[in-house]
Every structure is written in C-alpha cells, then in structure tokens.
Image (cartoon, rainbow over the protein chains, first blue to last red):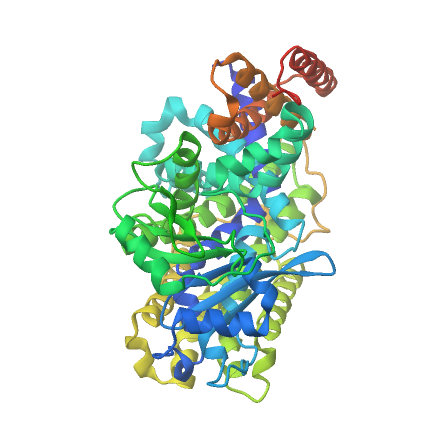
Length: 523
Length: 84
C-alpha cells in the first residue's frame, strides 16, 4: 500500500476513534457490568424481600388486569422467584411501559411496592443510550457505525504487520510507543469480538434510522409491514371487541412444553388478552445454539398452536435476526461466555482509552503543543475516570439509601451520585496536570469498587455473599478493582523506566505552539 | 470533514445501493430484508472508510452527491418504491 494511502487510513482511524471513543468507553464499561444484568436486578433488591415463594404468574396477571384493564393489550410476563409483568399503556397518546412484580402486591391485591433501587436499569441505559433519553440510542447507532469504520480502517492499517505487532508490547522507547503497542495488541487480540459488538450494536441502535431511510428512499410505504412480518414471530392481532374466557397461563406453558420440550421459558407475551383474537407467544431459549431464541405462538382463548419458531425452523430473516441479539448479549454459552464478554468489554475500554491518548500525543509530537490535544487528554481522563468512579459511587450509595427512611429516593440518588462524581472528575482533570490525575484516580476507583461489596455486606449481612447472583455481581466489582490496580501497577512500572510525555505535565494554558522540529518520537 | 461527509451522505447511498441489489436479485426482498439491512450497515461503514481516503473534501462531497443522485435515478427504474 502506498504511504500516502496508509497515512490517510491512519488519520481516518484516529479521527473516527476520537469522535466515537469516549461514547464507546461509556458503553463498554457499562456493558461489562451489564453482562450480569439479571444478577444485578437481584443484587439491588433489599435482601429480605428477595423471592416470593407463593407467587405465580396467573395470580400476578389477574391482579395486574384487575388494577389496569388496558394492560392486557400488550403485556410480557417474566417467570422467576418473583415473577414480573411488563405492559404498555397509552398515556396522552404516547406509549408508556410499566413494570410490577408479584411481591409488589399484598394478599388483597393492593399494590404496596415502594420505589427502590434502579441500578440495573441505569447501567443498561448508560450502555445503550449513554443515559440520554430519546437521542442517546440514535447517537449510539451512529457511533457504532463509526466504530465499524474504525475497525475496517484498523484492519487495513495492521494487516501487513499483524504478526510483528502481536509480540511488540515491550518496555522500550518512550511512553507513546508503549501506549501504541498496547493499543495494537488489545485491538488485534479482540478484533473479532469488536466486529460483533459494532455490527450488532449498530443493527439494534440504528433500527429506527434504517427504517426511516429505507422506507423513505427505497421501499416506500410497503416497508413497515414487510419489516414487521420479517422481525416478529406473529403479526400483532387487532381486537375484535368480543370478550371471551382465556385459557390461562398454565395451559399456555403446557402447550409450549408439548410443542417444544427443550424450550426454557424466558417470557410470555400476551396481546389483546381477553379478546377472541388474543395471541400468546411463549418465548425463551433452546440451549446449545448461538441463535437460541425460540417462540411457541398460540391462540389466547384455547391455546391452539399457531406457529413455532426455533433452531432448525426459522425463516431466512429470523435466522439472521436472532444471532444479532444473542451475539451482542453473549447469552448463548452460559457463564463462561458472559465472563469472557465482561473481560473483552474491559479490554475494549483500555483500547478506546489508549487510542485517545495516542491521538493526543501523536498530535503534539507532529504539530507541537496544542490546546486541542491538551483539552482532549483532560477530557479523556475526566470522562473515563468520572464514569468508572461514578458507577462505583452509585453502587456505594444504593444500599445505605435503600435501608434508610428515604428508600423511595434510592434510584434518583444513584443517578445524582453518578452525575456529581462525573462532574468532580471532569473538573479535577481540567484543574490538575494529567499526570497527577493518572496517579490518583485509578487507585481511588479501585478502592471504591472494592468497597461497594463490603457496603452491601455490611447492610444486608455477609451471609448474602453466598447467593450466586450476589457473588457474581460482587465478583465483577472486585474484578474491575483488580483491573484498575493492574493498570496502575503498569503505569508506575512504566514511569520508573521512562520520562512522561511533556503533554502529561503541562497545563492547558501552557499548550502553545512549540518550536518547529520538536518531535520526541518520530515513530 | 471527510468523515462527516461520508457519514451523512453515506447513509442514503448505502441504503439505495442495497435497494438496487434487492431489485437485481431475483428473490422477493421481503424474504431477505434482515440480511439486507445488516449488509446496508457494512456498506455504510465502508463508504465512510472510502470517504476518508479522498484527497479533497469538496471533491468527495460532489462525488457522494452525484452517487446519491445516480442511485436515486436508478432506483426509479425499479418497481421497488411502492411496488407490489
């Protein structure tokens, strides 16, 4: 490849990375914790309320319908120790989703739930929309496509020297060379997984954008119905207005077991429940397949089978759509794959962090000290450490709030704690020299992540640590702490051997144009 | 600038190129709509990469606009938009 073409590829890779890097860092860090989303749901509940042994889904369904008759139009029932009902209602013409758990109701069917922690929802929102309602998901869609472009560029840049760079992480040369080698090594090792994350993430987040452009420019008004047919297990039924008796949850589950014995039920979707056109979709997983989602669709009134979709019995559209979700969520291979995704997501954070630092140092080396590089370095440090520390503080705040008289304010308090920590980290990053930030914050963040499980244990009893879900979440928090301590150790060791890049010691104001020819690292 | 042009003008171009592919392949597009949409994302990312290689942004912008116009005109010769 010609040197000029290669240089343009490197420039594009760097610019796209710098534009998308911080958003990707937030998404990947929250995504790493989100690998234990269901466990986090359990972790965030008060220990004494976990589980409702006599709860069943039919009782929950009847209670919810008695309180909200409109809920039967579109509802999901989620089985478990404490089954939940998630339904959509129209409020002022806008669809609004509600969730109730079986434990939220007393024996008289009255809702006695008190608003509690929202940690798992918050981590999930940070992951897929940066906790920015409405615009965040579209932003992340575009970021995912840019990420895909950076991956294509990265492959072009590194293809010819792949083997050499695989063994290039050495403590020699200056600090920039080290960041570069680390960035390349992590990128090369986890490349296939990054392709998966970028593609599936873009597919999920860009759905609305693609639908808009494809229907507007290419397929016209026929697109929406074709898209619905291609992506849904059964078309949404219209209510006839004739109320009939429903078969009930037990018969739906029995029909699903009879039709697809290997199905592990994950949810029951009800549409127009109570109407003669009601349709019920018992969905879940058939394990041992990457595309493991399966559906048994039946009539609501007599549980007569309408269709079955699962491994070995899919349309071409479904065969491509199902792996998009399972490959992104990493839920196709049990705990081992989820732990692997957790590690890869943390390595991804290191990739974006090192990429941004490389850009700042490369720009300084080539063009002399610049305000843009100084600001970008501080922004990178402030956002990354702010998000990492902010989430830890959310975890720390959660339990003391939940067991206080102000437990109803737990979810807002978790978000406020995150925001305040992020703002403090940003202010500190812009106030102190970057080297001081890099010295303080990794250790501080590690201490916060080590403390979060201790606070949980102190409030709810250390015996709860023996529960698998609690152990997994606490283990993931300690793993983050261990990762941060490892990064800190590498930084200390590295700094003993080489002087820091001038960019790390100066201030933003001191970032003035340097004398021509200053290039500490021509590589 | 190149990346921005590639991102903004690459989206409709990628979708229309996929539409042309759907018109060229003798299989009903409804049967492979999901693979088509997944492919459109790859094409969009590839257009951004190619846009980044352009020497001058104004040439790139003109080229992408022309490519969009041409793809749109070609799409009008297919029965896709509003077709049965």
